Image 1 (tube, one colour):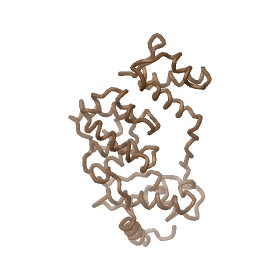
Image 2 (cartoon, one colour):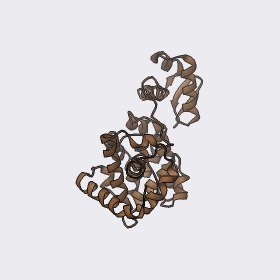
Image 3 (tube, rainbow, N blue to C red):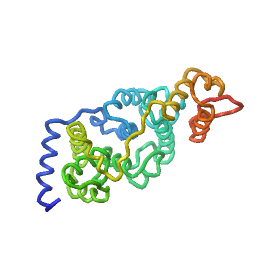
Image 4 (tube, one colour):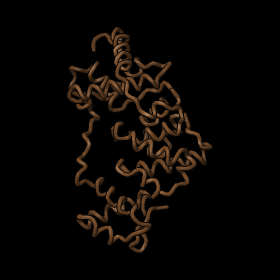
Length: 273
């Protein structure tokens, strides 16, 4: 990497100039509402930003705050969540809303330790919520940020660990306006992925997303979509509508029940609440 200290200012200048000319517009960047930002960060887990926009707007319109989300039925929530994938996130959102209403008076906690205790929240997501909702100068990595630092500082390294990147993220962080700085990093990282072979492929933590077609994820989505068509249905009715091995079908049903998304009683399938 050479003398890193001498590269900090030019690096920051480069990122800021790129952002000034190429910043992306997203609805969650045009609000300081902590609920809306919280929802966006859950939606952005494992889903590209451009795909999230329409669904985010619909979700916020339907469930404008934690109270409305905590009081909604899972069926109503999944009716909006359709086509987002990774459906457990919707369940996590509702569970988190219930906790935030009861324990935090309907206000998103700004403390990382408290955020991590919420369903579906890991350290990096907790930090992203703290940064974007509260403008806190926390240090974290997500895929676009990782791509930026690998491209700019580890061009000649074949395998990089996040523990090597994190000190650089900390040293280059704009502590006065971390929210916009992280937006800038993410926008530049997104640009890099379009211009070069994804720099994050060199990360030790890189995992290529599994194929969706024919996957258990796809089958889970089909089951929930069928359930939205009626108040309750039978295991047999669902099975007949899906071209899938019975053992695999039952395994996925059992997983959905274990996750608290559906309820199975005497071969009748309903949403949990």
